[in-house]
Length: 131
Length: 131
DNA sequence: CAGCATCTTTACGTTTACGTAAACTTCCCC
DNA sequence: GGGGAAGTTTACGTAAACGTAAAGATGCTG
Image (cartoon, rainbow over all chains, first blue to last red; front, side, top):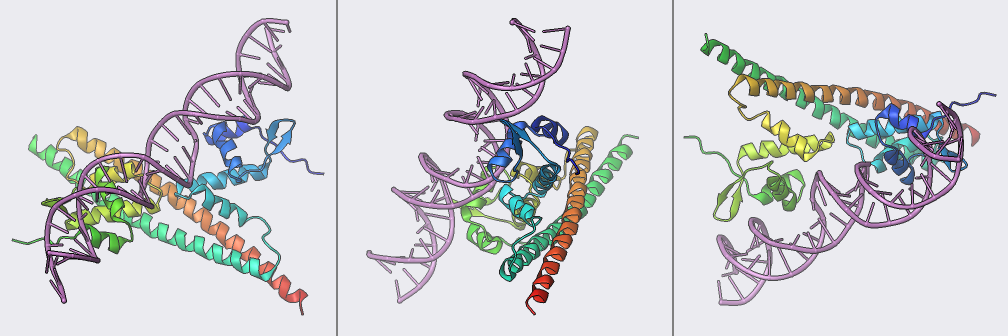
C-alpha cells in the first residue's frame, strides 16, 4: 500500500505564493476537491497538480472556468464515443488557442527587440553628445 | 504631404469584432487618443496599431494597465539616461514574462498531446470491444 | 492553562473590463 | 422633412476573482 503524501492549505499557499482564501475559492468553484479530516482540508498530490495547472492557466490568461475544463481533460473522460469525440474537440480547441498565443508571443518578442534597439540607440546618442 | 488614412469608431469595431463601447472604454483608460472632428472621434493608423496591441495583450492575459505600459514602449521614450534605463528595465521585465509564457505554452501543448493520446487509445478500445 | 499559530465559516467589499439602456445630435436619403 | 444609421454623453449594472474582516474551533507549547 502506497500512502500518499498530503498537504495542508497553508503549505500549498506558501509553496505557490497565494493566499488560503484563493485556494478555498478555487474549491468553491469546483476546481479542487480536497479530503477532510474533521473540518480541516487535506490535499493530495493530485490537488497539488490541479493547482499547478490553474496557476499556469492564469499566467496564460485563462479564466477559472477554462482551467476547470483543462483539468477535466485529465480525468479518465467519458466512456462512449460521443464523449470521447467531445473530448478530442476540446483538445483541438485548446491547441488552437495555444498556437495563437505562440504567434502573439513571437510578435511581442520581436517588438521588444525593436524597442530595446531604439532605446539603446538613443542612449548611444546621449553618450556622444556629452563627450 | 502624406495624408493619413482615418477610421471611424464603427469601422474599427467591425474590423476587430469588438463593440464601440469597448473602444471608448480604452480611450477612457488612456490607451487610445483619437482626434475629434466636432464631437466625432477620428482614429489614425497609430490608434489602430495601439488597438491591435491591446487585443494581442488580452489574448495573452495582460491587463489594460499592462497594455498601456506596452504601448508606451513605442513612444519615443524619455530623453535622459534615467528614463532610458527605466525603459530598458521594463522591456526586460516584459521579456521575462513572455519567456515564462512560452514555457507554459510548451508544457500545456505537451499535456494536450498526452490527453489526445489517451482519448484515441480509449476510442480504439471501444472499436475492439464492439467487433 | 494561557497563548499563539493554523484552521474553519460567513459575509460584505473591491477592482477590472466591459454590457446595457436612455436620451440626444448629426448626417444622409427618398 | 421624416426617418434611419451612426455618432455622442451619462450612468447604472454585472461577472470574475479574489481581499478583508469577524468570530469561532483546534492543537501544540512553554
